[in-house]
Length: 289
Ligand SMILES: [Mn+2]
Image 1 (spheres, rainbow, N blue to C red):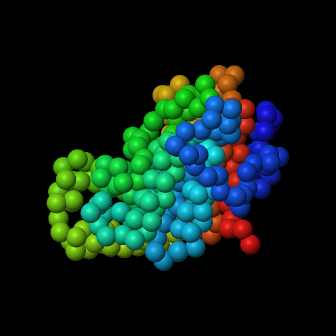
Image 2 (image 1 turned 90 degrees about the vertical axis):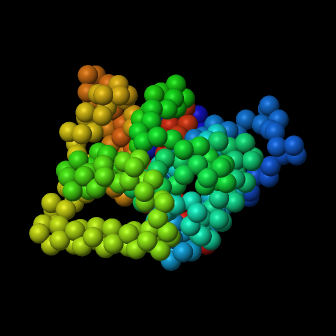
């Protein structure tokens, strides 16, 4: 695993990473790892799982990932849209319960878990965070990844061509709006979420009908915004999800190579980014046959 080559395409990895089907690593008695047990050298990033009772196979794939590969990780970052929808920590959710139990079990083995809210689940709060054993990271954040400052964000903030969405985002992220929303009874919150979703789907269909090419541009990141964020944060690497366009993009600015890693969604399969000191590896994740 000590190679310094970087794999650039999904399905094109030269690394013999731990497959998802590997036998689960059992927690050590007492919960502490012996010092010589030097497997924790990979940091994992995922996003856009959109977990939903309608797609139980993906929830199962995620639970398996938490039991298997994630146990050997140095840390796990979930960069938003873990859930398809979240309208408050007090909402009954069997999927949310199962995920909280599995995340907590992982955290209890000593793997730190960080959750950044996405546009679907920005109402995940401290109550759920305590149950699931993760820390909530603000969007965006700069983290030190093996000595390299790395900007992590959900990604919707980069989609500035979608002005209607950005206005909706500003409105719904205001603390007063959130407090007022969460104070409403469950039925009212469900109705609001359904309305917002229907409006968003109608708007997307409308955009597609007008121009599919323009729809693709509007729903992707703005290249000028990406350059501005690299400059603003003074980093040479950023990791985000949201657009469901998994890729590793590189560009050169001021004689520095900039790398932007876009995580994939978990609709048809999983997607995981594995970062080590000298390598990055973006892969699909499938259930073992
Ligand atoms: Mn998103």
